[in-house]
Length: 111
Length: 112
Image (tube, rainbow over all chains, first blue to last red; front, top):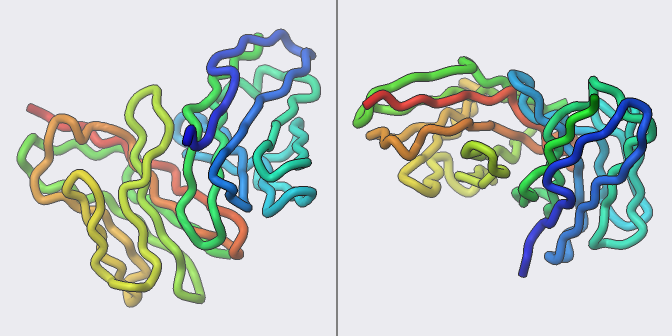
């Protein structure tokens, strides 16, 4: 039982490049979310999903896309990376009205 | 919509002293509240959760939190700080049944 697995752990992108951050969970959780963590700002919700085929925007969705074709996977796509997207990204999964389980994070630098 | 506010971005205590990290929530209905801890370069780990079963909630590593509806608070405490408690702590609430939202975090420093 691996929990929530994020890949890669580290990534450096050039401005304008695109990439996909992968997230997979093996707990059969309905809900999955992506957060970004920046100093002094806590964790801010980017996008979330309450089930396969259902996604919605969080508080900072611009520049990111998501999809949820299966219960297990919830990839986050950066369409055209910008320096403002330099951050640590966390994926989380949970069941309704319960605590979230987090991946180990992806540290992204955009130069 | 429900939200949480953490008072104090940095808290510093001496080893052996009481730890008190403050969290206030805004909610018109009984909330689901959580405290998480993040050690350097790691993900978030659940410390404890409030789900209306009991107002005093005990968590891991000797931490506990008390839900006070009259004060809309869910402060985290530990009677005696240990060096290993140095970390960042986040309060969180489920918002609108679907979103889990976080406070801005409190960095706890322990002085020897």
